[in-house]
Image (cartoon, rainbow, N blue to C red; front, side, top):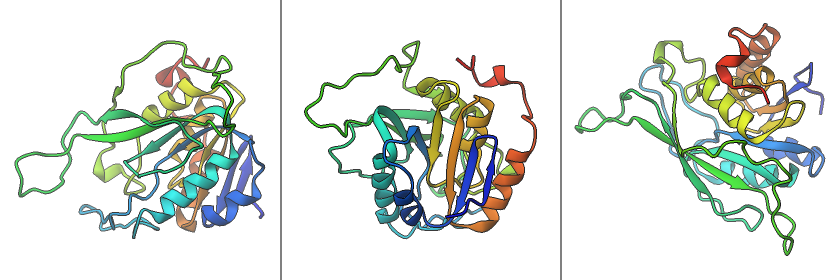
Length: 235
């Protein structure tokens, strides 16, 4: 399939990831970072925008299963949400917490407002029977499971489930090296790809909605808008 965008090591495909992922080479990417549809029929109360494929968890499960085929052995995967993945090709998840530092709108009829989101961390163990080895990839410093980054102001959101680039930079920087590749099969407006670009990684993004591909292509065509040190040491 011809890419929608392909420049400086960043590639975007417009289409269903379940159709595109089988065309990518097995064991060809170094890191998976993605925010799949959660199967909750999300509709933004602020912008009244929905998320494609959010009718059930099936799209997320199928897309991630296909992504694991592409992910190299003993490499890391970060999946936002609590999608129930049943696969022997990933370790049991370690649950990270994204502390958004301020309360979201949520259900205004209850006294508690949501201030966090879950991120499931996995390691690829596709080669059954082989001892899991990190290959020297493990994050240089052991870190806590709570990541504190302010949510994006609702008025500034380009995509209804858009994540802060700085948060994604920390995930990319922690689990890959300069020049390696990052995959996001549910790309949205391209925040993961922007983080990869800042951290000097290559990246592949897949998005089913063409308008978001256009937005992502435009943001990736621009120069980095803030200095790299904002997102880590680029090591």
